[in-house]
Length: 249
Length: 249
Image 1 (cartoon, rainbow over the protein chains, first blue to last red):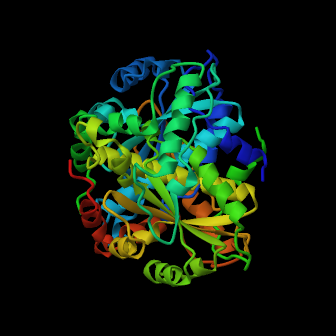
Image 2: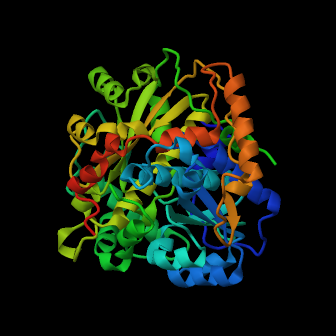
Image 3: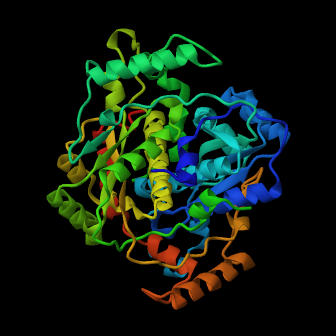
């Protein structure tokens, strides 16, 4: 079962090295158009897209994410939760209450912004572009808010470095479907499950044999590293969400 | 600038009426495979997918969302944040701390689950299937937790009704890009902006002229309705997130 769109989706790799070629205005418009055609919660279009082209702002993003390679991308997008616009546009005379500060509307905005991000990734790959979604912009949300003058009821969720690929990484094997796709009832998985053991071995071979950045690593060891990161590194996220007016109820 | 993937993305419409034809096991596996090839935050694959096939559970979802048409879909998926599996798989002996209860890891799980959802929407559309992403499963999270036996550190974020379309709705016009795509600095929009006024007129014509469910509606009036919904209707979300072990820091 295949077609060009499935082939594009299945060929996804994160790309972190780019040629010097910048995206054209037409490419950027096409990517934003693809994002816009994706679904949004209650058709409220509660997200916005920032294009970062100012070299000083790109350098600041390189600093705060620790990923200076993003400055060499063909283009850089930031996807924002945006309830501010809707607050401004809804006629005050017929808006009897507001739920914009609720957890519900924060989630709706995150869904909209994240769905738009994935649509841009897929659209880009169909055009021969590669990209990496960057959650690391959350390392310093107050700095982003200041840098991009983000008003209340907006929140930056994902960065996207996109451009013409200068690398062709191997596909990283994913979890066996039985460990992540369940029917009717959640099925708890344990570390002793033979499929976990087999997946660890598979991923170990991948890390040993890939052409760049080879290392000794299994999935469960990778998780231990990720879970052991000091949550204080990103402790500012909850406070920043509240400061932007979210999670009030 | 076009290709089959862009054409698929630009042809997106939400589909709520389906033929009787159920998805085949091969189609379901293909959709889950497409989801898995999408990127995940720090390659931690912190999401799971539930297939709901039990008619009683589908009826319960119809009740709690208020959208009984979902029971006629060719298949029904629920996308979960899943940090529980990673907590179980990370070897205790080398996991020095845990950040699984942080806002950061909740967001990472939401990103993973949402990106997977959009990948399935796009993959499905490339196969001639139609779908509707359903945030309305959040109407009653405690019920979902009980219905699907969801352990701590999991959370249901989006439902997806998918199947063979029995309707062909028109494309709903999106916001002008100048109102949602900014360069380097956030650009606040006001209701008096001529582009807002023009978009309201455009959407009014769409609602008047579309073949089904015609009504008098503009975008800003639609927003007023959405923003006026009583936040108490979904006030349980924040408590449910905390009860599942999230948002602790």
